[in-house]
Amino acid sequence: MARIVDQYIEIVKKRNPGEPEFVQTVEEVLGSIEPVLKKHPEYVKSGLVERLIEPERMITFRVPWVDDKGKVQVNRGYRCQFNSALGPYKGGIRFAPNVYPGIIHCLAFEQIFKNALTGLPIGGAKGGADFDPNGKSDAEIMRFCQSFMTELYRHIGANIDSPAGDLGVGGKEIGYMYGQYKRLTASCDGSGVTGKPVSSLGLNGRTEATGHGIVFFLKNMVEANKDTLKGKTVVISGFGNVAWGTAQQLEKEGAKLIAFSGPDGYILDEEGITGKKVEYFLDLRNSGKNICEPYAKKFKSAKFFKGKKPWGVKADIYIPCAMQNDVLMESAKLIVKNKAKYYCEGANMPTSNDALEFIQKAGIPVGPAKAANAGGVACSAIEMSQNARKMPVSREEVDTMLYDIMKHIYEASANAAKEYGKKGNLVMGANIAGFLAVAEAMTVQGIV
Image (cartoon, one colour):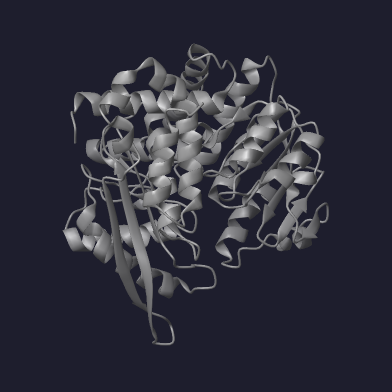
């Protein structure tokens, strides 16, 4: 028997050929909200889902810049302003050679529900460029960021859209973009972008916020299962800001991180990745080489496994913090074979749909990305509030607010899953809770 949502999935396939990531994301979200549409036929009658799956605006532009050899380079930039029902658009900017419209579409669509879960007044968007910052000098990165912002600034602002960082875009890149935004708008109000350095109206603790939020969500999930993080062994992927913040907070909670990875392979350090070892993530990130092998050369307790992923390492908890489709079916089978106790997504959509379903069917509690990964955007919204009030927020206040937001997200996801007959299924619950918040706003605003 055909599902209500199948018609909408077909629309997405026809309108977005060659965009498998976007189709995968829509299938995952809409598959979860089928019971909501049955209970609320008014959403079907009003064409709400048809409007939800089509972006309000997709902006594409060229980004010309000059490299250190004096040669003109041209990249392509994007900003997908997908849905503003709940408030100004919010979502990161990604710089990577594999950025194309399909990636931007799927990340922006996912961002709608992630932002809705926070309970904060922010809509969903995403942006980026097919620019690879790895191996580029600081001067080249600065020139690229300035050129990128020279076009983007026309489409953003405090009450319109306030982008943040994402893969390949950290504090340095955001700083360059904010400097250009300030120059073009003659405004020092801090709007335009979030994730800025603290010295430029940024928020204390924003850099590590996503990682801290992941662990806060995980803590709620573990405690709901009458368990504790203390003493648990953990494997993550990545060594960027998300992985760094995750590693920091895992140590505070008494968990033991034993492995992480990069594009070149993975590191196993059974002694535990703590203290100065965690802070070494920053050196790896800032080296511009995007490799993790130097960790094994610096710390004698570590081993490096070239060209491999860490999912075969036996641990209690697995947290993919690197990129989309990091965990496919082959890796999911290893995680289940290792008798994992918990699986929590740290990156944006790091698990393929079939792999995620396989892990769930094995009875492993799953923390979905749109719920667990929301700490960064939550702190971006706090930064927007800080800039508007012209009153800095302390690091302690940020962590307190972030924990409360992540607890709310966990409870909203768990309650929605229970209400719709899928108790414990946080993947489904997060999609339903986010959809309901957006659907209510879209309904009261009419057909727009």
